[in-house]
Image (cartoon, rainbow, N blue to C red; front, side, top):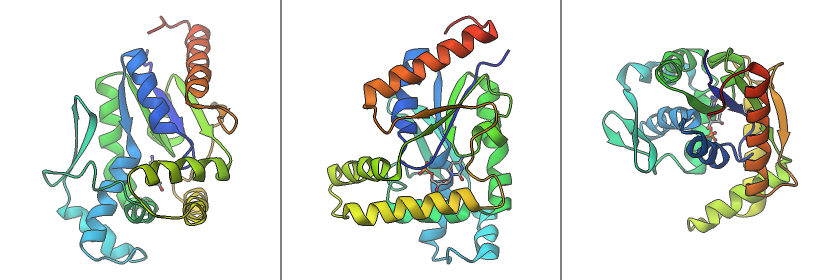
Length: 229
Ligand code: DC
């Protein structure tokens, strides 16, 4: 039986930091699917293709080779052989990622890559459509969320620590715009799968959030009769 864990939710809900810790605890591979969309977004940005130019963005796919590599620092992203792990972490690339993610051809291009990773090993995979589209038969599905204000505050702190001078208001506006775009797109929109468990971390700190998800996973594995990892 597969024991994959799918975590979906809006930007800034803490998916990646929490999932990384859970993966270390469980001995799972952590797969950050947002990074894959960001890598495609970065290529579009660098090539000066307009975010609204669907045909232009789709045409780029023939030129792109996206690879994931797992090393001591976790998941690294390679774009045509270049390590872009850090370069994809900007708000500009995030906005591009959201645009390319709305294109059916882009999602189809990346779907097998994500499924293949989950076939090879136990993964804890985070994104927007993991429980609904990528791994519909994941053993555990969690929809992780928090209020837009809390998520924007966390993202703003993260960016500020990295030296960014963006204001909280700007970050909140970006978070809300990206949520709206991710939720309203016709293909694989951000939504809670029917069999996903909702976890709201608005009032929880990092350790409390990890404890909540650890409990959810344990209970689900017990219910399914799987051995605890
Ligand atoms: O999680 P993130 O901020 O790194 O994701 C960047 C963008 O990629 C996000 O706005 C939506 C998109 N995305 C997606 O459509 N499907 C996924 N499984 C993961 C991310």
